[in-house]
Amino acid sequence: MGNANRISRRRLLRNAAAIAAAGTVESGALPASQALASSSGKSNGRPRTLALIGDYAHNCDAIRVSLDRLFKELAFPIDYTTNYYDLSKSLLEPYQLFVCCRDNYIFPNGRNLPANRSQGAAGAFGGGAFANAEYWITEEQGQAVKDFVTAGNGFYSLHSNAFVSRSSKNYRDVQGGVGLNHPPLRPFKVRIVNKEHPVTQGIEDFMVTDEQHYTIYDKDPKNILLHSENLDGLTFEAVLRDPKEGGPEASGPPQNLGTTSISGWAHEYGQGRVVFTAIGHTIHAMWQPEYLKLQKNAVRWLLKMA
Image (cartoon, rainbow, N blue to C red; front, top):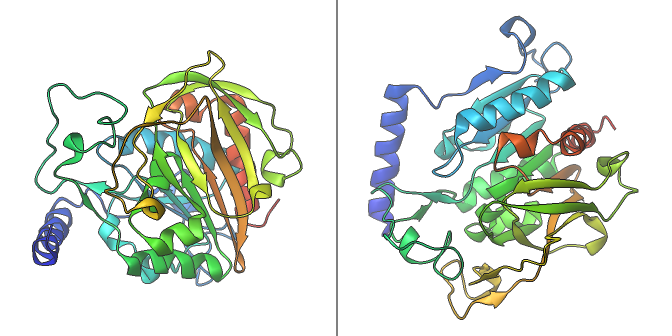
């Protein structure tokens, strides 16, 4: 994956997207008449949100349907884009909240899925299944998100987005952690471990069937809001791919990650705020009643409206 080839493919992707116009920023959640931006960067006095969504494993239409309900019930406008290569300081400038629900991989040459693909050591994030993968984010883009939050804005990182921290130190610094791996869909309980935080106010523990993501949180443990626990005692064994342990391509013997994982956190960063919640592979999970309430709390807290 040389730099020259990567730049060439990036330019080709830009040109294709410009022709298709399918990934351009589009408004949602509110009628267009209610989503007109003023010079202050707000829509009729409402804070503006940009969501970067969709990847090979997460359909952008499903994510949009999920988030449209959330932002419609909050009566906040939201714009969407799939153009990961356009993420920049200038793109974020009109907004007060950045939502990202996509992981760190792109496949310019197509995916190479082995016939005997399995989860775990050679599974969803193992070598063979991702032999043709490249990382889309640059450190400049990571810095743009960091500067956006430092200036006083909000960043809501959803589901697989923690994996982007594998390939950008700047992104990981502002996000606060990194995704490791996950088993297939299975039921687990989400426990509220910090009930005093505004994001978790009024939220009860809940059951969900989803991907149980295993993560590392780098900052103060008091900022952790959620744990996920498999009540059936099912553990998860995987090769860890943490940049702090040898780089994104690190490999080694599988490790047993146990039945419980960190599933959410919230912290201040500069003048702004960050929330990560790991649940969200399906619309059913996103609309679980307690989780939907938590998402509303998160958006309000990120916009300093809680």
